[in-house]
Length: 251
Image (tube, rainbow, N blue to C red; front, side, top):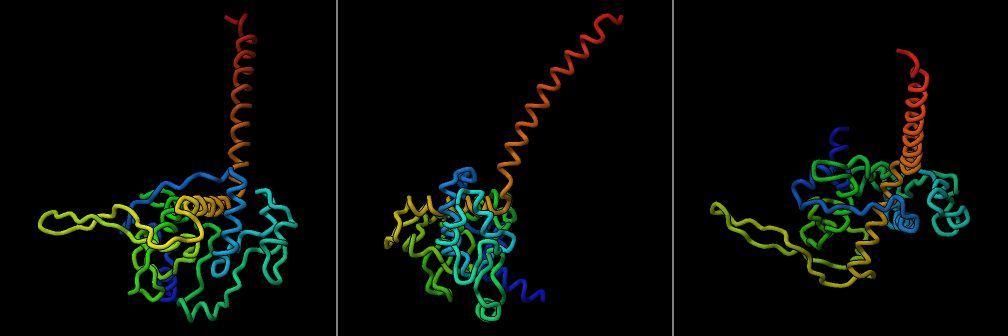
């Protein structure tokens, strides 16, 4: 059982991202789009089209997407596949037996991925945003891909057709008699369906959706909390003045 768990973690990268990224590049700050409904809607579309083939979101139902402005009819027309129903959870269609044969175990569930991958390098969203923008070709790997945020990751670049091919660029620095390669940026080798800026925006939308999915009620809770604090502040002033009026004649 322990061997199986370790195999899954090694194969899919997400599960051990907080540790692995400390050995790769610096995490970039992810944009906060959990209040941006068009961005969340685009992120949901990307998630269903590119992530849900292998990864499930077993704690999220399709009809909960109504909270980000997607109607039930839009869900039926654009996001459901096969026999899925609006009230179903987002479950991957991958065969568990085939997944075990190909990868050593089932791909991890992504419902809480953005909440669980934080580390000293940043938030879980920062890790995901960096990870999905750090793939490059590596013929030595079985999938043909590697990742600077998670070196030797077993997960292929599922967004390749959107991003195209890029090569990492390094500076060579000599220190203490040893040469060190320091990452300095990316070189676009072949274009994808999106421009580099559009791709970064798309990844930001996807990561924003993963953040929202981890706690759909967070924004509502924050708004309610702000109103509660303002109400308590006003109530405190009223009680303070009432207390002063009640005791003004007492010496």
